[in-house]
Every structure is written in C-alpha cells, then in structure tokens.
Length: 148
Image (cartoon, rainbow, N blue to C red; front, side, top):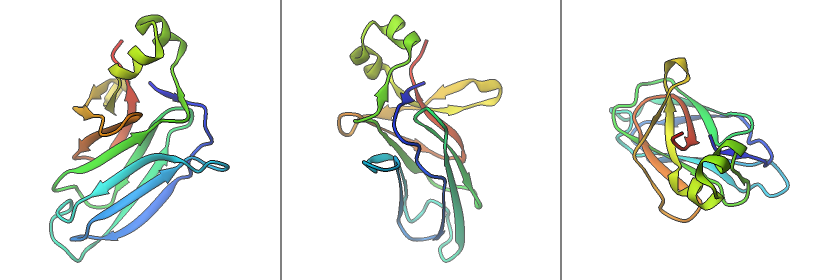
C-alpha cells in the first residue's frame, strides 16, 4: 500500500441530488491543502434524478486510501482518483521488492479491499503524473497498492 507522510485529510459527508454531475475533492490538511483524492459522480450514477444521496468519505490514516459509504446504490459508475505528487512514501518492503521508487510507482493501481483484507486491483490509468484513476461501481474501501 502506498503510504502518505502528509497531514491527514478530514472525513467528509456530502448530500447531492441525483441527476446532476458532482465532484467531491478531499485535500491534505494545512499548510499545503493539496489534493488527496477526488470522486466524480456523473448525472446517471444513481439512476432516477431528483433524489438526495449522502456520500460519506473517510480517509484511511497513513495510506492513500479511503472508506466510501453511499446511501443509495450506484447504478452507473463513478470515478475515483488519488493524487500523490507531494507525500508519496514507498514502504520499505516495496523498495526491497521493486528496487526503486520509480519502479514501485509504475506498478501502483487503485484497489478495492475485499473480505479477509484481500485487495482486488482495478484497471487504473494515469491521466497525469502522480495521479491514479479508476472506475468504481460499489461503496467500500479503496486504496493505492502494488502487487507483491
């Protein structure tokens, strides 16, 4: 799992109206307040429009990860992006396995935490350096990780 040495982002709860496009941005704490993660919900993410949905986001301490709770089921897909340009911190084990931070960074993907702490790595893209993006279709726990 990709570790972070930066200030912890705050828990966030947002109420949105279905049928509208919504972006939720989580930021590391002061002093930089740089982006940690972003969730994009397209207008069709929850099906019928006009309903209210509560989205709860709780960053996981010490890693690039979060727990996502949603009051309605996702009917479409949302996009989750993690941004790590400033507080990237490769764990010691990753440095041993991959032999460099650059090789470890190339192997990273967004993963969904499964029962018994197994991680399903999702198809992830890098739209810009130091950013990972993946499509998600369920609430749950997500993090940035590389295979062992």
